[in-house]
Image (cartoon, rainbow, N blue to C red; front, side):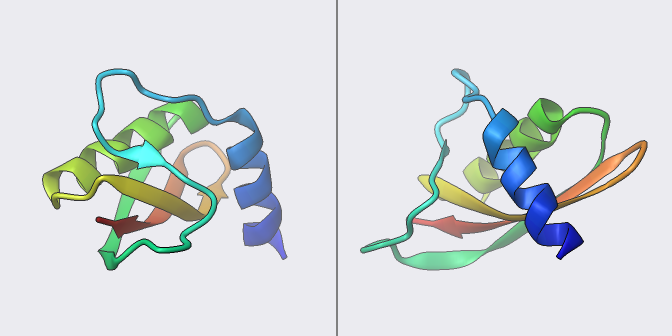
Length: 83
């Protein structure tokens, strides 16, 4: 349950990164999943989201869905990536 609460909290505070091409989504209908990316050692939720977005870009994804965000002093997150 902690991961679920963290994910909901993360999605509530998430902001879009204008410099990134990969867009955060919450619904995956009609999207082709191409993999999973993770990021660690972020100090803020925005920093974690930006790191996941950059990694999604590097893998050629157009969108990503955050599936978990955990941590106390430093955050770790996982996102599914889609074309």
